[in-house]
Length: 196
Image 1 (cartoon, one colour):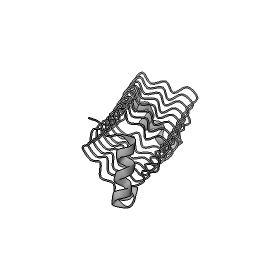
Image 2 (spheres, helix red, strand yellow; image 1 turned 180 degrees about the vertical axis):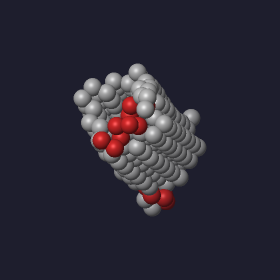
Image 3 (cartoon, helix red, strand yellow; image 1 turned 120 degrees about the vertical axis):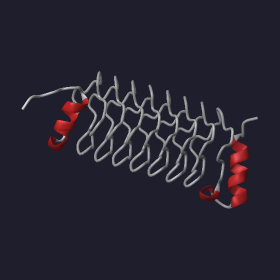
Image 4 (cartoon, helix red, strand yellow; image 1 turned 30 degrees about the vertical axis):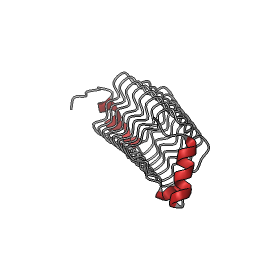
């Protein structure tokens, strides 16, 4: 049986704060944890598929290798959270705050990250094909080796983002903001070849 919100609230009370909560590997499928402060909690390897985490505060939380497929995280604060190798495929993350988060090798296939703040995020090797990233902020993010094939990056801010070995083939970049130092990496990422 999946844990309930009441179970999580009781555990937080028992351990004396969300930063001491260890829910790693737990079944939290379709749990409603919306609008709750879970700062610093450990959810590594947990099953949060279909969970409602909208407006939740998961600042510096550990969600590495967690299953967050189809989870609702719109407006959530995941600043500096660890989401490396997590599966967020088909998740709703519009207007989420992921600045400085570790998203390396995470799966965001077909996820909605429109208007999300991904500034300074570590996204190397992330799988983001068909992701909705319109209006997202990637200022200073590390997207090296990320797969953004067929992603929607229209109106996204990619200024200062690292794009080496990034796959942007088929991606929509209409109105995207790119800094001059990323131009050559961008052309390579969308498959443009040039002769010397």
